[in-house]
Every structure is written in C-alpha cells, then in structure tokens.
Image 1 (cartoon, rainbow, N blue to C red):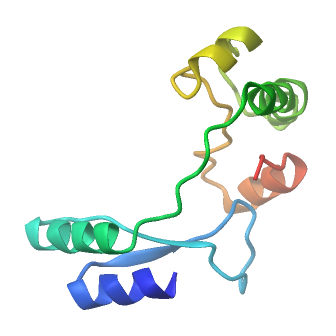
Image 2: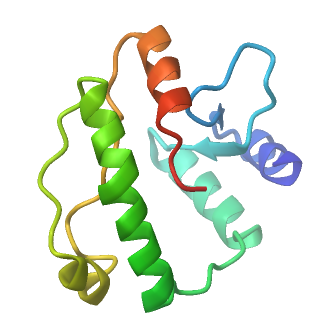
Length: 129
C-alpha cells in the first residue's frame, strides 16, 4: 500500500483507502486505489499499475468453487435475506462452477445507505475472504 500510495502521489493521482465491510473508526485500511478523472491522471494510474502490479491469484479449483457456492447459498444468502437484503436467485451449482467467473451471479450486501445497518449486516453475515 505504501508503494502505491507513493507512486500515486508522485504521479499526481488522487487515491483513497479501502476498508473491509464493517470496519470501525480507527481500523487500518486494507487497500489503496485510485481512479482517473483526466488524461494526466489516467497516465499516472497506468504508470503505477504497470510499475507496481498486484500479485496474481491462482484460479479457483472446482472444489473451491463448490465450497463457495455452498457457503453463499446455505449461509450468506439466507443471512442477507433475514436482514432484509434481496438477492437474485442463484444459478445451479453446476452452472456456477462451470461458468465461473462469468456466471453472472454473486451475492452482495452492497448499496446499504445506512452505515450502522451495513456494519450490522457485515457482522451478522461475514463474506468469504
């Protein structure tokens, strides 16, 4: 994070910190990110992205995807729904695994405007990490 923050600053790119759902005041950020609003910032963002790429992730195995699907459909979605969050219907387990990451379904509690409710939902319904 410090390296990217330094690069963004050097390139004149505005940046912000990312926090996990349910973070409380005083918690340390877990990421740093930036968006470009003009050509100068876009070039700076590109320079930093190429100069300091993130660590690639290995593809998930079918077993990991199946476990994720089970977690989503058996715990996370029912938890969200119990907290008033509407989640679109899930695809079949086989389609979720076969089409990943293009399955066009992923349960989220994003978009809760009330920060207290968002924190309560994040605490009650922890997402996969």
